[in-house]
Length: 271
Image (cartoon, rainbow, N blue to C red; front, side, top):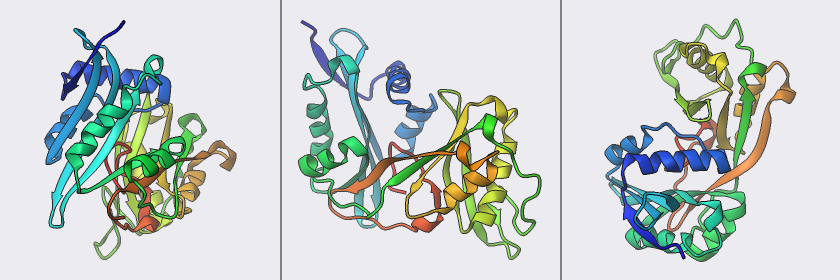
């Protein structure tokens, strides 16, 4: 019978194993340097891994990030995953409870998948939610055509209007599974967003050699889909599904959803 042990903040090779497994079974994509970023950027960060005893072979994992603000700390849970052959064996819930014990009475957020959202609400109190879900819209690069002409009213790398005001902001990263990750991406309007997306793509050498790029955005905002359709050879090439919901334990933190074209990070964020 296999025995297990729990490690907190394991070596980089464990994170890379998590990236590989979640990519194969869940289609999750990361950058291999994300672990270093998580450890250095948050006020505190925990990656909890259950491994086969005496090895670094992953069985289950969950992570927790903490931000300290004027109103006290906000925690965020992400990367909750059990290797398929160990699902149903009871390895996942104890480590989820472990990070919830760290959270205590503080506010905590996560992005719950459709099939898990109700469970998070009922069993762990993540029942403070916006009225909408997060949609995931994808465009394959082979089906993308960058518009030759876009508005001359805006300039990037943040988007500035003619008065010098910031009206858009975006980041593009090269991540696993040969994808382009565009996140975060905010814009005041579609016209500014079109300028920003065009410049982001053209910053990447041979961007057409990557498989796809996507937006993960509040379903109450129709503009991200409109933007992707502008870049598609045909609207039918943009695929969209309901994927996640932002959930909180104590207090729902509002955001300007009409400006959100892509949230910061599936793992740790609320916008």
